Image 1: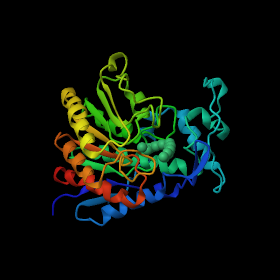
Image 2: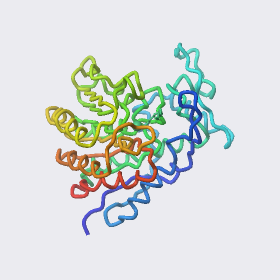
Image 3: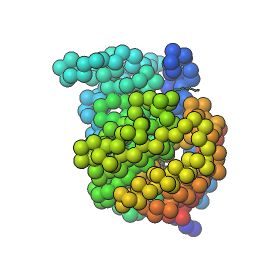
Image 4: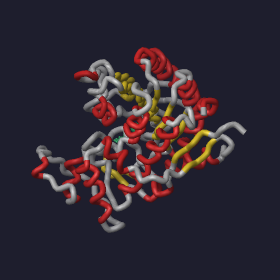
Length: 345
Ligand code: SP5
Ligand code: ZN
């Protein structure tokens, strides 16, 4: 039997269940459910000759601390002492964030480490987010040690909106950044390609001054779509990192053909020019036609084409789960995307 594609996942990720969010004043069911992970897991287990689910064992605090500052981590930890039925929604965001005024142990100060009100905290958030980060760290270690050519971290909650000291956009710890940092210890030049519907603002800001990490993101035009303030093509990196950030904003209703064209002509060209030695894919599936919060029109077979295109780069690859909120199709879309990578395990 051929080698199976390693899938990292920890059961404790399921215990965090945000119930709702306020989206522009409207109370809606929270899109980032634990059912998402269950949908993916069920779909991969169905094909157990191809996928091997592995539970991370090491609690990843050191890996998280490489990316996030200790006060932001503390703010998320502070929620572990909330009563089980209580969920805190950061809703007040301070203008001044100087150290002397902030107490990360006080849950009412969580807004100092957060940038939107869709990213709540409760007693289970920290362990779910930490084990999600562990998936990414372990998946990267396996590839770094050349025990696999490709691995998949079933991260949930997602990560690409989180930066050094701000969580938001359903993201707490930046799993893709954690994976990239692990890879960098063996592969000096790493590319993170972000194919989630939303701009990966957290990943961008974490690496925008770094010439050794190329960050490429295709996403809904920020003039119209979340996170609104970043993701424009004028953001090209800064200082020594200038030229090593590429944003490809795309209009509403972008379909698979157009998406693939942009991916190949712009994103993959940049990755080749950069001569990346390893690849992290921030894999969101909210580009799917049926997604409740995305506005592209990719169909399930398009995810196969996407995977096929990225496999052709022939790079050691860590695939990190990001968004994708149409629970019925999510598992199938993820499996379809992973299929072309099976030859490269
Ligand atoms: C990881 C990730 O995908 N995070 C996305 C966070 C998006 N939060 C804002 C959602 C705004 C929803 N607006 C829905 C409009 C539907 N027509
Ligand atoms: Zn998204």
